[in-house]
Image (cartoon, rainbow, N blue to C red; front, side, top):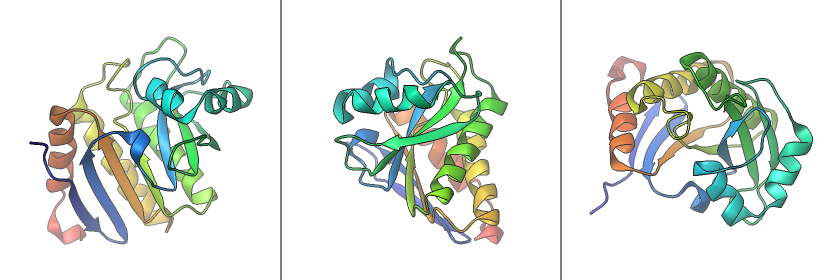
Length: 183
């Protein structure tokens, strides 16, 4: 039996952790765990391309390359979301770091704010091909989302949509660990 989604409101931001398929999310935008050249290979990018259509990759590649840690937005093809935000959590070498994950998360949230989106769904950036530890990724991405929400009212809802239970547990633990005084 899959765990239930975990959700917590901190300040004005609703944060959720979901075990599921990011391509099925009906949020305003889904985030693609991208490389800086924006070609879509395997993992989250491959799933988004397979379900949303090759036009997402074609549109993204016209916008690249971008600097690692940056993000750009395309349409979402046949996905339920309206947009796909391509967050370059790694370079062409497919290596990542805490700085790139934090930068890519912040850049994706800035793109969502620029487009005046209310909801965005993230995968665990850099934990697949990049091999970054899920626990560290969760702490970095949650911290980046909270920091962004202090400076910008949008998006109002951030979901972390994760493909496996260990990563789901890591993100849930990161949310649970935030002291109640911040609520």
